[in-house]
Length: 234
Ligand code: SF4
Image (tube, rainbow, N blue to C red; front, side):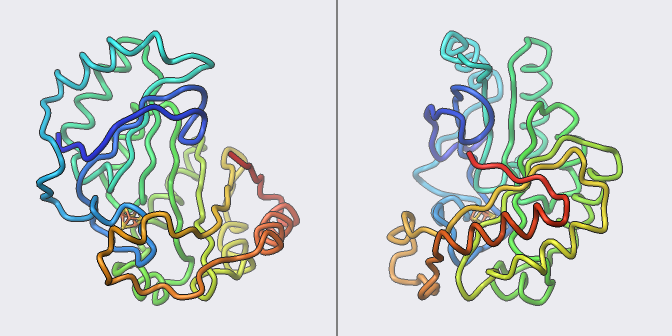
């Protein structure tokens, strides 16, 4: 597996203290991506490991998985390496390790990967297909197909919406989409735009005035709650 970086964080990408692996490669190209160096499939800074090496490292780290913690795989897009990821997840499940993934939700393989994941985080960038294409460089159809599948089977799911001024700061459009489904096992989180990864774009960064106020995040939360959609803060 190609891993760009790894390290511990607490409670941001799943419960408790977690060992987080950033996998190299993504099929989207979000203009605000804070990990732009994780987008290409090849990156000289990414290291190649076999599944067993990562598994052994995780097992050696298990003392650190306190407060219900475990391992999180994020990216890039984790399903770019779905085959190896699935093999690793199966091993972790057999050994009782709590697993989480954060995914852009666009790969069909996500459905089989998710069967071996304890905590599923799916990003939703835009409800409108043409806007999604404009800002992300790809259709949102496969993301919606997967979300609707997870709603249908009643899967626990944590949906993250990055809120960016001038891109997707209308909560009503999102809520109108989600209200059409049984989201009783879903929670929604809104992430305010930031520019921590801007330097990684090496001068090609296109988002201008993307910052949003706390009032906009509150408006998202209020709008969703009014539609009966559960919101969370991490
Ligand atoms: S899906 Fe995530 S990793 Fe991929 S380009 Fe978008 S923000 Fe970056």
